Image (cartoon, rainbow, N blue to C red; front, side):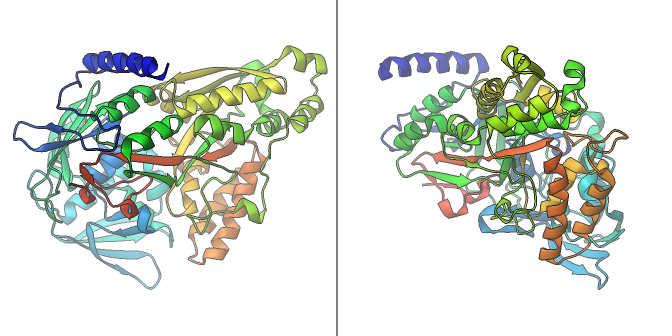
Length: 542
């Protein structure tokens, strides 16, 4: 039976690759962990082939939003003043060579590396000023730029940042804002991001881009840290997990991160020693839109929202959506990664542990009857994004079943991230499953709770009919970055998170595992693997 299933899946994969135009290349079996023949380009160089689950919506770093796309555009193609290495504990200087901070913490004077853009132009202070001014006009980045008063060119290789107030989380700002070639972006105008370009300083540039089939990266031979060992990288779109597994087993994919947990045993067998399970610095959460008008505004009732949270069985979600490899949680960011994150074990906020009986009690307290619960009370549609067989879709199905068990009914809607994510951020949904990749500072919560982050929030809290004391929430955001004392910051963030948690609008349920596999032909140090922002520059061929 297993062989018949694999044969059928292989046929499906072959058809999918034919339709997507990605079936070329030499392949060889890797089911015993041996190396494949591999694919080569016109110059006879090995090509690294990586699975991508969905289309890249833009080649402009400012427009990239999907967590799976950030490592491509934000790490391989573009760089910031700071980089991030999760495997080694956080931020490090990247395009910033030297950083001088004034005694009052308001002025950062940065000397730049002797780097060049992929178009050959030297990196200059004016490019940094241009990139920051451009980002500061984008509402999406308000949460990491709002503290900046001005950015000035001191000389060709020196930039001065003046802040409005001391801001202890500035490292994440220096990582988040990427530096682009002022000349190339300006010349491209509104068309920038719609095709290949050479406007970054990263080790790879985009040589081919087709939203339907994927993209190709080429090594930049003038990269300021030295030319990468791997010369060409192809990202191939394979949306279905089962098809991706067959592709890896057949040697058609060389590297896969966020590999499907449901197929992990098969992938381990196919990869031999070339695999790793990393704890993700991420969160999957159920968002409950208290402003939804579904069923006469039922989600505006805090008792109903609380009942929904109590109804969710996180262990079942983990088993179905993550193969049991994830970490059920009540923490927005994992406290063992982030020193300033409120730890669930230390208390201080509501965690809504699974309790279906409590959920039913709350619904009765809200005025519904046993007959209502028996018939099923509509709470609208549970919306999420990704593949129909992906982990978010599976989680949605479990949560749908959990809600039905306590007398609540909802439909499930799954579509591409490019469609759903803008709707979630526009509060155009009832219930939503959303993923956020964290950083190494709990200030990251600012993009979900502070009004200056309009355009990135999934729940809008600043409202005359708000379900929280939004003024206190925003005050706590500011207090949290106003001091460098870790314990004091943690106290502020614990109070902040207690307000959000008790509103039952953002309900964390799982830190996803990051499962990684690669072919025997690749030389990868497991200790250097990062759960989110992997670095192709560190890879080489055997």
